[in-house]
Structure formats: structure tokens, C-alpha cells
Length: 328
Image (cartoon, rainbow, N blue to C red; front, side):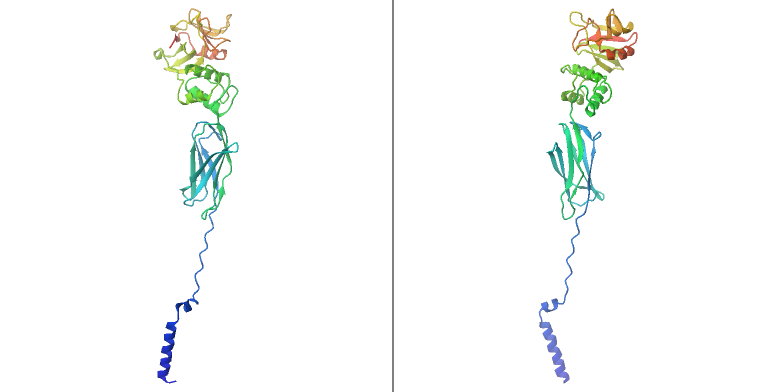
């Protein structure tokens, strides 16, 4: 073939290739495979608490549910459900907050009504994180009331608050007769009904700091004050009531003598009048135990206290100890 004709053939071939559509070449190009989405992250949820005592909390007291998520993914939430006796009480959607490589969530609470709570936290599956659920946890909210024979958290709280104010309580965690008398003395000072039952109102007033004995004669040093208005006996040291007891003073026909006196005689044991461990502060007037100590003035002028308290009061008082009796 002549060189001129050969060159012309190559030129025509090149022009024909340029004229082919782009799709003709695209048939030979293999597209990149679509990326496989990452599987959702597996995780676990665990619950914890602050402000509890042996998984119990006194009604009206603040406490907190604290959750831990084993892996953190931004933008995720948990649903916290609290039931009582199988009935829904609280449902909250809480954001999971980052704490290093893990996540955390919290819910502060203050519940008044008593009962056994069941608490669960769960995460609904998303593209980023798999579904997860915590184990069910149980917390008991203890009612703010107590009476003779009760035991447990409410009684411990009651005794602790009373003791701080100087009331004489009994065995820790057990609502015994001495704790009942402390409640009675508190009720007398706070002008409540004179019973030995610690109602929710007693708890409420204790929480507010009510019931403090107001010492009248701070300058008398270590002494005794008989408050005839409230019918309580207080042992005072360094200007503060360190022990407070319920008492019964003289009835209207035989009233207790009023004034400032000093103990001049002590008589141990029980005498012929049924007076138990007596400390005399003027003439025949004494502080002593007696089998009958009603909630109102009933004595012949003495300051009667319950027999179980007589010995400890007798031992606290010395010859010469000041005794002040008065109406407020």
C-alpha cells in the first residue's frame, strides 16, 4: 500500500475512535464496591446509686441513680423506668454523657411515699449502637413514720435526730420504750399531741431542727431545769441540754414550788412512798422515779420521771447541783 494511502487510513481510524460515545469506553471501567456499613457497637448498662443505706432511703431524702454504659457513642440516650408494685412511676429519657471511652447518665430523686421500687435502664437499638438493658435493681423507700416495736432505717434516723437535740433514746435501730419517751418529750416541747408515735409530722419537724430545749439559766453551769409548761426535765451542761426527759410535776392542788434551788440530799432505792432514787432540792420536793408518770401534772409537788430513767438522772446529779423550776 502506498505510504500516502496508509497514512490516510490511520488518520481515518483515529477520527472514528474520537467519534465513539464515552459509554463505549465506560463498559471497560469496573466501579468501586459500596462500603459495608459498620455493625452497631455492642454495649452493656449497669446501675448504681448514691445516698442509699443497704438499698434503702428515707422518704423525702435526696438520692441519685447513676448509670454506666460500657461504650460511648455520641448522640445516644437511655430510657430509665421506675415501677412500684408493678405500676409505672417514673419514665425518663436521659442523654449518655462521655467519660473517656465509656458513657454515664444520672437521675437525682427525692420520693416521699414509701414502697419497693424496681429500676431498669435500656437503650433502643440505633445504627450506631446495639440495644442493651440493665439488670433490674430494687430500692426501698422507707416511710417517714415509726412506732413502738419498729426497726430499721426510719428508726435510726429518728433516734439520730432526737439524740442530737439531747433527747435520750434507746437501742439503735429499735423503737423501744426509751425511744418512745424521747418522742413524747419532743412532742411536748413542740406542742404536739402527747403520744409516743413518731408520725410524718414528727419527722418533718425534726428535719427542720425543731424541738431544741431553750435553756433559761445558762449561768448556772451544770444544773437541772424543770420546765413545767412543757412538762419536761432537762439536764444542762455548758449551757446546753444534754439529756431531756418527759416528767410530771405537781397537780393544781399540790403544785411544784417555783424558783432556784440546790440539791441537799440524795436517797437511793425506793422509799415507803414509792419514790425511786430521789434527789431533794427543797424541803420534801424531789426529782424521782415513779410508776405513774402521766402526760400532765399529777404529782404532790415533786418532779416525777419514768423509773427506767431514775437511776441515770440520780447518778448525774450531785449534792449542791442547782435545780430551777419555772413556767415559760
